[in-house]
Image (cartoon, rainbow, N blue to C red; front, side, top):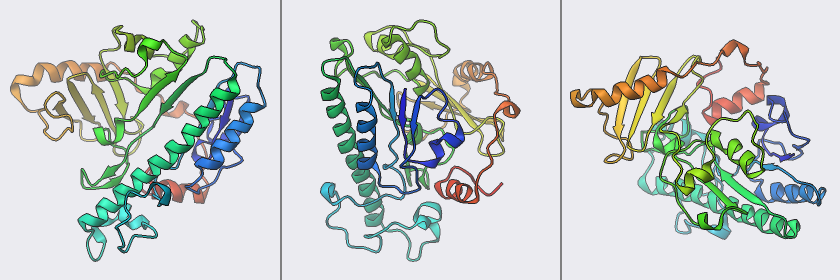
Length: 330
């Protein structure tokens, strides 16, 4: 098992090296532009074990604030405003205090830079996939591309990502490709699924039937097998101190529980996929709401005290606050 990471928050210090034989964090830094170097290190590590069955995890961080300009993928050549060279953190954290206020062309610029970041990272993931296929020399290889969150671009009055569970943040790419059933190539699955099902899927592909991972085999779901009726998302630790939210999602409905106020939001995804019209108070929908509430109520809250604690450095704490993962120094 190999892992190549480039960011302190997924480093050995925070437990991400558990179960990994070779954990390479030589590129670990707070710098944003590392996809090329990360791909090169990952390929070198993979080449060190040419004849062994290998699990390789590569963590790309580039499609993340601060969004950088990539001229080779320029989606915004016409922009020449005040944020041409750099988007200051204030745009993300305190955009309402900007003077002059943020203009529509500037919002477009931020979105275009985000798209450039995605294109830049995609280019280097493409190199990784192509060269691993060549290095595997005919051995079967499966590739999984997944993401942990999306970003807001003022859809709900804010930028970046916080601890919400709305579509903009939790509807993320999940691609499984390579040595899988050819009939599944190019197939799209509309049913809601969770990243938590990826390990169980990989175990099935590896022929390992006994494992501790929950969730269905996602490839079986893609073939038409019935998957879970619901997907679950948590906006923060259920026993945390603020912004505690949980959501249950079916193909047609989504219920959000705001734990701090003990209030609910209900959305009809078939008619309102962007979750703008809260229907939780509708009398004719109380049966649906009650059913979804019961799903959340059945989930056991994790024991917060049982989770190992990590002492954050001052730099790590400041970075977490700046990135939106912590509301304040508490």
